[in-house]
Length: 202
Length: 89
Image (cartoon, rainbow over all chains, first blue to last red; front, top):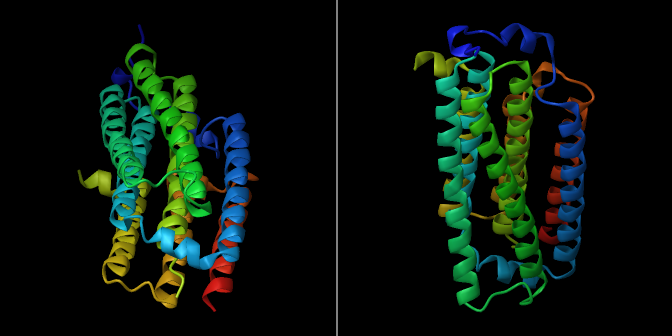
């Protein structure tokens, strides 16, 4: 079996010929998905404008320190996955496996933090039905969390394939596409965090 | 290890980390005055561009996706900043 570890830089020339990382179909999906989220952000801001006092009071029940922690977790996980893509292009199988594993382990911290946060809210009697702010809070972060879970599964498939498949051009496109999806999860959180946790109404 | 820090995604990650810590300082100092909140929104826009350009590798100018990303960042920033200013002014 061909082992790209024995042939570093196996995919570097192939990658150098392309400008876009990942499959174009994935980029269509990402564009549609972030557009949908942009509409949801607009809807949130419109509703916030109708009841700024309620949104401000509700926002204060959220802990921004958890938001900062989640941001650092997702950014670090994204970086590790970007390093896995870089290693895949060089045909470095062990590094791909190492960075993907680390990326998933760090990423799992987001799930722990989010579950703890939901648990505290529900224990305090705060639910989706409490008011409009929390309806948006649970719906938007819940939808984002679903994207996160799908992203973790996609990374797990990438990890499994990195151990069983050749690190050829096909694998490089696969991991680039998966990584772009994972970075999108990061992107969406970079908007959700300040929008939900930090927009202070004077 | 040195080569790791020369990679564009590592430099982007360091910048993203620093930007997030800046936001944390603004929040911890309990300074969500109007100017601090505006700064937080603009820092978020800066971070979005870094992720698009250096993690998702659109800095190489892959069209039309680079354009889609730039427009998305501009629109989302305008929606949040505009919506915020309407209630803050």
